[in-house]
Length: 153
Image (cartoon, rainbow, N blue to C red; front, side):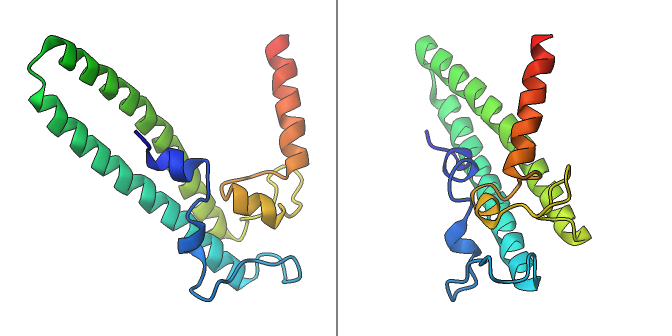
């Protein structure tokens, strides 16, 4: 079963819904995080969050209906497995929504789009691909290398 996490958590993040109706996309030749770019990313984040919440509500409702119909023990066991998977997915989505909310707060505070480690602008391409990014690619790679070394110790 495809979920909003599958479709929007790893994919387009509401790209079509986030443009301003005129096909606007942030461009590198614009001032970084100008008002139009902020509006674009705010819409993108809100659309993504809404899609996750809508999908979560629909899937949970369907699982509740399906589980009421299961008379056979094997079918019930299968439903319980589905529930378990769905609950893990919901937990991942809950964490993703928290990251989306944090990105929206950074937008409100004027910090969105800037690396929390270096203070440098995060590339527009990275923000398009991962609007909840908090670090530049370079800072993220350094962070991941340090985590790996820490785990190996």
